Amino acid sequence: MPIPPGILFALLTAVSFAGLTTLATLYYRDGGNALTFLLFRFAFAALVLLAILRGRANPKLPRKRFLKLLALGACWSLSITCYLASVHYIAVGIAALILYTFPILVLVMSLITRELHSSAALWAVFLTAFAGLALMLLPALGEFHRAGLLFAFAAATLFAVTFFTGARFSRGLPARVVVLWITLVGFTLMAPAVYFSGAFALPATFNGWLWLSSATVLYLIGVTSQFSALARISAAQMSMIMNVEPVISVTLAVAFLGERMSALQWLGAAAVLAALLCARKVMSPGATAR
Image (cartoon, rainbow, N blue to C red; front, side):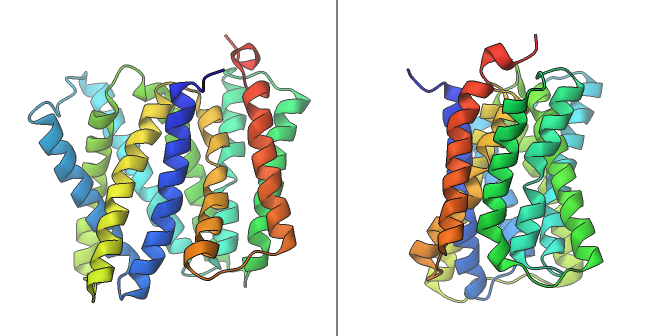
């Protein structure tokens, strides 16, 4: 049975964002920082999409819907900003674990709006995936801090809203147009943040430029695939598939950053993958509310 295009786009999103994490880490080791990284990836994506669209960037939407598109961009950008802020106070492991409560938040939203029917199997799949992530990320736990926790939960909530509203909004619109305007909003918010913070940091070596440029390309692929997927599958399906992103990120860290995984972490990865395999059946069209 062939895999639907929406699922393939979702998997490409997870793989791209996982690679993005590894490349960003290598760039930071070369003297870069998160704000500059965000600014570069927003600027690069906007320039490429403007060149591709060549004057067709205006989606010709009613004013109200166009404002919703800009609000979606602000929500996406703020979610990333909140996540980056959280890791200033708490360990990356706990921040990532909190961030990945967003698939459960999306599930709750989908149940409230009757896009999905509640079932024991559905909850078991989502909670198994989260438990698997917990096993993978708990070894990286550090000191808890109230501000860090608040920023991480804010990021998870904004991610959930972005996925849920993005799935509804993306249908009928070219993904490139959606991504362009979301990226332009991100650049508009990030440019003054970099300027006033004085945090602009160029790579120190050729390798640093290689990591940064590769990461910006992966971001463009990942975010375009994300909204291509959301135009084809439900937000709950998309968020469930995104659980594989931390698994790939940790695996890449083992391969390229010299990190190691314990037996419990491998067990957690297996739990996530098992949940994903079960999710396709549990979240089939027959399980989706009409």
